[in-house]
Amino acid sequence: MLGKYPTIKLILLDIEMPIIDGIEFFFKSKDAKIINHIPVIMVTAVTNKKKVVEMIKKGVVAYILKPYNENEFLRIVRNVLNSLKKNKRML
Image (tube, rainbow, N blue to C red; front, side, top):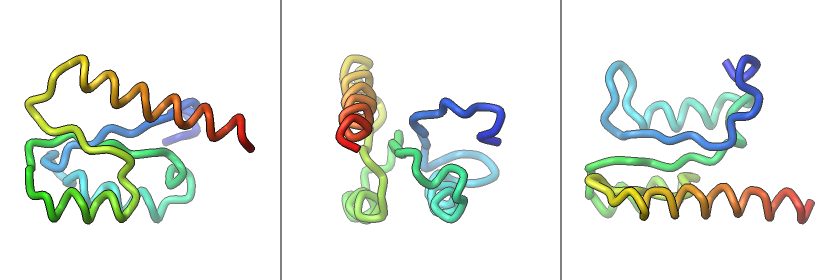
């Protein structure tokens, strides 16, 4: 999968997706060496604070609750991408 798209910098997941939910995909991606280094942002209407805290502890870098404000959404995505750039420069 990533071989076709080597420049993927970020994964956006919704918890409620058909076939495989976002949480299941997240844990499977953490086991897949080819994408386990790509940061994940959850975009969801699920407001269970316990679930949010659990997913952040497991490695989700941000949570965006639906319905979301477009400017807030873009700010969060930019912040994550900018922090990736800063981390790369520090290496």
